[in-house]
Length: 108
Image (cartoon, rainbow, N blue to C red; front, side, top):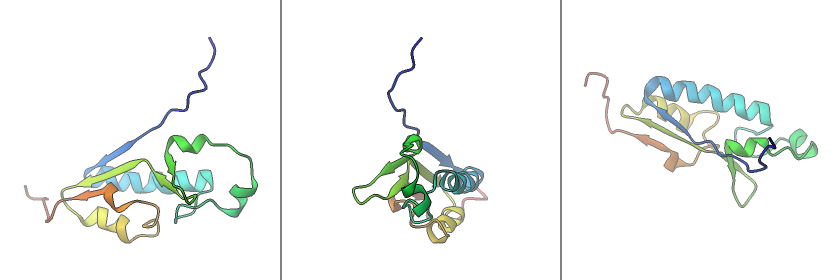
């Protein structure tokens, strides 16, 4: 059979401490593999390279050329998600992609 030329889009849902921690590593790796800087913009090498748009499966391009992961982080306990909000890749994600509870839920 023939391959469809339709691009698929993947949305990643990361739930709980482990899910959010694994997602941090995955998104860092995706960025490194596809020439996307921690602020969401392409590296100079990537801009000069080929026009491979395969990474658009995992990233949405904004009007100003920034790439934002198609992902949501969700955790009742805010510490891990706060690490993303303040970490090296904080500019990569939109704030509405980060959903947390108000207080520690570890003993619930």
